Image 1: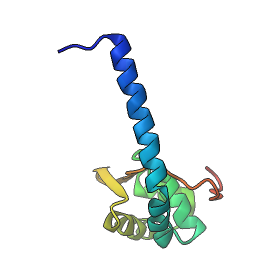
Image 2 (image 1 turned 90 degrees about the horizontal axis):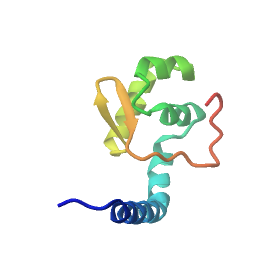
Image 3 (image 1 turned 120 degrees about the vertical axis):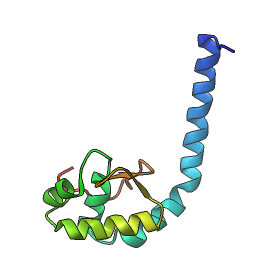
Length: 107
């Protein structure tokens, strides 16, 4: 079965609307989960840097904390099911969400 371009675009537009709605509905719970562990500016910066492209070593250097501190925080995030490790040592946020009122210096 093949879709014509017009139908595919309409389906894509609907999926975008559904995603935006789901993100709005989940935002409060996600923020509460995130803020229960991202309790300092350093931890907030670590969260922002967990994009799957930065290693825990790179994150620790950029934030100015030990690599062990990053690993501990990453473990807490994993326990809350907020990140994945697609590559060993490269944490990635499951949700591309950083609260707009967080002041993430250096990002």
